[in-house]
Length: 481
View 1 (cartoon, rainbow, N blue to C red):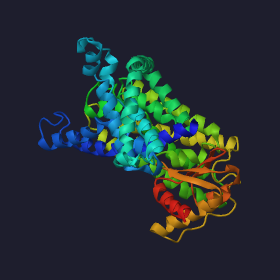
View 2 (view 1 turned 90 degrees about the horizontal axis):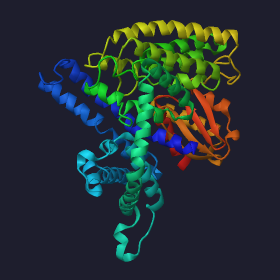
View 3 (view 1 turned 45 degrees about the vertical axis):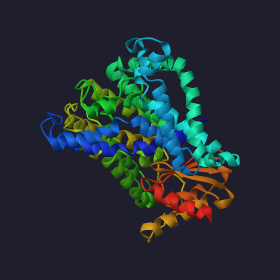
View 4 (view 1 turned 30 degrees about the vertical axis):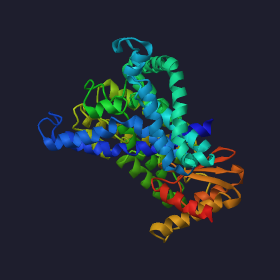
């Protein structure tokens, strides 16, 4: 079950990666016309509408992305089936359809059906489509029906399944929706404290990859909060909308880079060069783009106490930003790019204060991390015995560099004798192996990766960084030989 949930989280990365495009378009549009929201500038209106075309269709992106990501060989037929699944269920459970089925006026239909086009339904549609593809894509029908054999039958079977799912949700969805709304409202009613609790739980769930499920409740229109969508659309309450995003900026732009600096300064002398390379790359990614995994996975499992402290400080940052109604938003993550793009949006409220807060958190992170590492002798990167030899300097560039890295990681994993499947998310290789105890972690870490995470007997993750796709592609070439 855990592996399956992680696969869902990994598959969500593809559609989530599209959101920066919307952020750029809408950010530039609002920058041009911050008060009229496009009414005073045709160029601004064009850009804002172009961006909203992505934001407003997040559920469809999720349906297609998950269906593609969780299907065998990531086939396009699965993506099409994901779209079919979403269209079937949202049409059958639309307000007008439900009113027709119940024989009542549309105004009397349960409000839950007015929110059927949401991220949860998109995720459900994608999962259903992937199951149908993996089950029926190789089915051969009798000669008379041969045209519908194989991949062509998948959308048909998906439609049939979604009719059944729709019938079930006809009774269950109002209950599920009400529960989600109550959960979201329960957090939102306690204001800044709720934002702090959310920030804390967000970080604690990252190690197992389930933070996406929590994020969807607050960021998207699953429980009516839709913090990202409302922020970029300019709807909501100024100083409130964006409260589930703002507090991440001080952490990602300042806190984690400071943690990386503390780990570099406390590393053993002979390890400083290696740690400097890791922390510089991770710190820059966190500051500029908001991608935090290279740094977080560097100490998450090696020093769990520090990670809990990190989660607590994230919750504190969320609480402070929400308390003072400082807001900024992001389309992808809380890095410099999104901060600049969102700073002039209608819902932005004193975003520059988040930079001052970030400066304070830089000091807090550095002092706390350095104190705990030295006082408790915590084995952060460069202080343990995980890699005795120096990381080899790669003289290759481009494809050769990634090919060399992939070859060494593959060998460290046990090669063809042990590796059964290769996949990746934004920053991590996600690997299925026959026996995780057979891998050589030292050999893998000697390539300069941020960390190796064993998540089960048959599952291993290697934290490579934002260029992980190129390494994964090279490993797949090796694995196919």
